[in-house]
Length: 133
Length: 146
Image 1: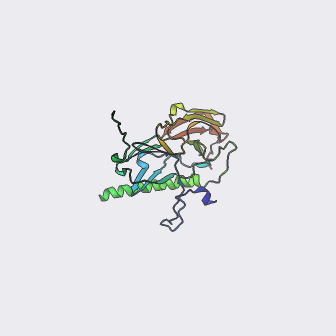
Image 2: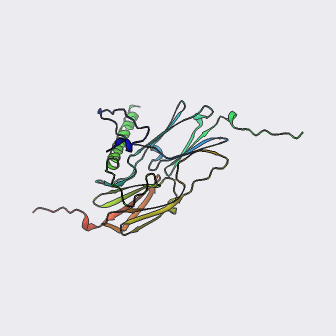
């Protein structure tokens, strides 16, 4: 099987404990990112990932979203057809300094993650009132 | 503290096992594509698994109102349709817009021996799981040697 076709960017090439190459398939979640005056909102599709299987990390200027999909499978099941060929989601984004990383808010509902990254209040746009002369 | 660490590592071992089980199941399968297959990246992605007793269909459809889904089973053809309407963002700059927005409809061919009367569906964490039982006659029977 052609590994490179199945795997996505971000796949780890680090050998695992047994010395075998890591054949981990990492799924890249679809995201929407938009920005308004108050900050940035990111939505990510992570079907099958519950709140406790989700890991969001901010390391300096990098935001990493990781999630493990868990689906209920009966004993002795064989795959007939598969479009989703892995069970771990991962995607990283770089942030910029005007964002307040310690005030990130995350919400998970029906497999959709909503992350709100606020801008520093002093950098939020202010409307300048024009006084009547 | 030790106790907690032990618990955590035990849990993560469990997930690791589960992950490997899932990855080996769906990842290593040769890609035989169905005649009703949709283009790669179509929404929602679907996996189908089968055991002796039942056929399990997993539809990866995050952020959907389960009441808006229409699922029909006619003989061995499973049709599901629905829509996902994303909130439009006014006064915002959009940088990435990868998530599916709109109506979808897909048809899947299931094995011929399913019992179309015995179907159940559940929706959890954005995955719609449809379970269809197989007919008794086709389940492998153990023959006792006297």
